[in-house]
Length: 103
Image (cartoon, rainbow, N blue to C red; front, side, top):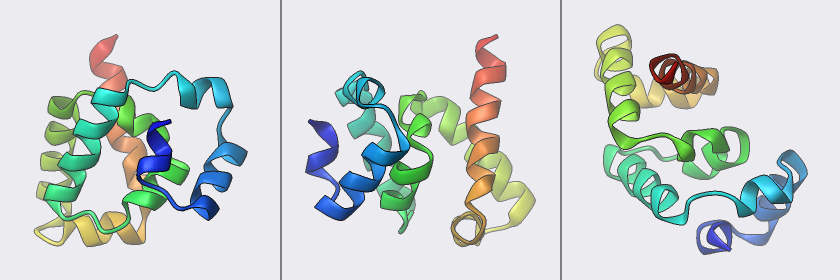
């Protein structure tokens, strides 16, 4: 189980409360790892909270996430990660943007 590698038992339990087990078990382990490392390298200090509330982000291609983050950086400034941390609903823009591109 991929999430056990990253989350403590408290977060893990909360994720299972938020998402169906079938969905969690269907996550692409390799892509999850890539997105996790990418966010870590970018300096996201709230990755566990992202997993808890925006697990869909870990299904996206790195290229799509990076493109959306560049747009957010232009809009929010160099402190964009901190701003996303204060208002995690901004992550919906990354997810929505990726979905729109796939259509």
